[in-house]
Image (cartoon, rainbow, N blue to C red):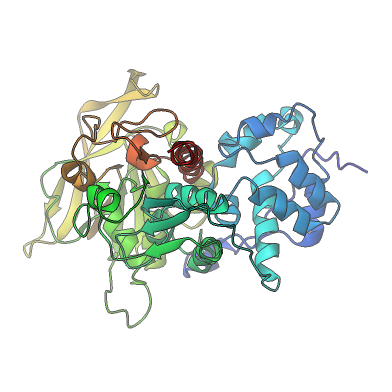
Length: 461
């Protein structure tokens, strides 16, 4: 019998006043009974509108129908035909604006909890005894992938499944890209990221860490000297942006990139860490995206009273609604229509406070959101001893500056067509390195498209 409830099964979570003091995962996951009950809410629409909202084109009705039958192994097989990282995507993808936004059940109630079901299936699979993975037969071709973030891993996985000899080059000492250094443990446990990467290695993907392409080795050397026939650039957008206001060079001011990398990759929150980091007694986070929410929630767990300052209203926040809700529940204070103009120093050169201009909204700007404009003469001071800038990132210019003939946008993004082909023959790119900071699943979609184009290119050589 179908489940015609208008509401979805709630996700069990840690209580706010408990979780805001630890880095354990907030969401606890569905039980088998909850997953089956939620799956039965799916109407199995013939048109499959949900699938049109998935950047990697998972056959959503089919995998959900398998969950409803209790055949979780078959559901996992359906998902992994299209996705290399189901346990990751089930946790961090903005399903509410993608697959779930297309769900027919959402017209008269809540959509089916597609993301929660994907997470359940992946976690169920990972809890089973490991089965032997059969490596695809080699096709004799060799491809390189720069960056082990979501776009690079998706590209590498699809190429490996087709028999390519794939090597992923990662600049840091741990693979995973933004999945490892950017997203906090309480949203995405790192054991899950590494489990997904181990699955790709089982297919034959090689991962070389501590390799900075553009410095350790160039793209030209990879192709001319090391025999790689095609290269995919999935190096992300890890160069932080700042506001260029007075006081940004003070002690106690961080980019969100540095703050989150030290916490997530270097475990700076653990007692006895060799690279400790402090959020002080009061922290101000500047920005309104998911990265700002992550930085704020980390600072809260480090013991700070936390303020998020954002120059628009709550209606314009780009962060996922779930992340905003969790931040509020955890005691984080939002100051909307507020824009920093100066960071004030104490006598020792440390942050003392943040001077902010009050704002008001006018006509929409190029982004389609209402444009914030200063409210004349209206300023406030927020006491703080830590300021974290989470206002966006751009691609690192290193690869562009060391690769002749690689065209880029003025802001640094690599120019690539819809299949990921760049201005260099045999060189493809995708994800944040092309679009600027976006979502994990969009980056994966770009990696998959590029893998298909690289396959066509190399197989026709």
